[in-house]
Length: 417
View 1 (tube, rainbow, N blue to C red):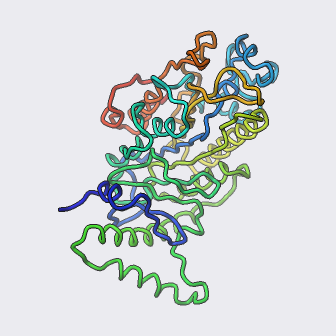
View 2: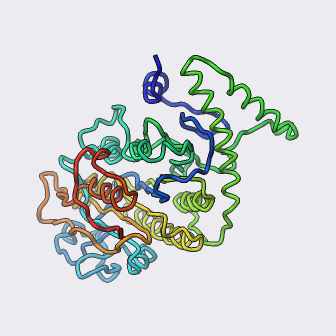
View 3: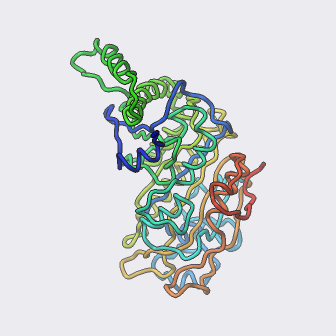
């Protein structure tokens, strides 16, 4: 009996790494690479891992309750980069504020979901699967993986969904990218994403590659063997396609010298190479600021501000700004009241950001009501995070969100159709 890719992944492997020193690839049949995705658009998802403190990012500087709850950590009103007469941005986010003023960024405030969970693992699973009822340990498709199955699987392109890791060497696949028909290729270094032959015999490189291709091209009646064989063929072909595509990119814009800057410049190279990527995922970690938050978060927010600005400038230079949308999220916000270690503990709701030429820039929703907290002293959300996903699906990717999200959510209206 034939097995699905999902059966193979669940029953045979927990992790499969085809070590071409050592990118990971998905199981799928490939005949051509660089094929355009069905929408012709790219979604870049930035995961702010650890639980970003939304109140010190989008600062409610007009709210006395904010300053009462944070006598040491609150951002002084005279330093806030004001967006309107109620909220503004952390002073480290000047370039982000510049993009906001240009109407290139939408800030969706007070995002969350019913019965919030304060565990990193569980909360990440909820956001990545778009399902507040999920269990972290369960096998379940991700919201981007489901989209890929519906809209990108017909391209037969292992580069249609790309995970660029976390800028620190990890290639762990985000649960959002888990699909049935299409699963992401993970890349954290372009030079390493190719077949590594014996350096002692450089003239024998082609023979070694041809041997791999021939051995993986053998016929078999066993599904599992065919999956692994096709993975080998995909690995060689997609790595060659990638190496050719990224040569189209000439670095001009200066990116910040940090993990996010590296990942966003890699994303720009992939987009410039017209490799057929529809989804690109990047991760910036370090937001679990239980102690010493002031300096740590300032550095992280500056990375976001400068990284987004450099990436947007690069997209404009490359003529790609109209075809790329960036969405940033964190698995939860932080508690309203500061703790005794100059930090904040796990909270609930927080802001999400969307950037691009297609964005109707501005503030959406209201700042959290700091006088109306739950029993643990956390904010109560106003906008379900799945409404952000749904708006992106319907207005950017031209895809019906209901089959992916399972329910219908309000259209927030931050995309120019």
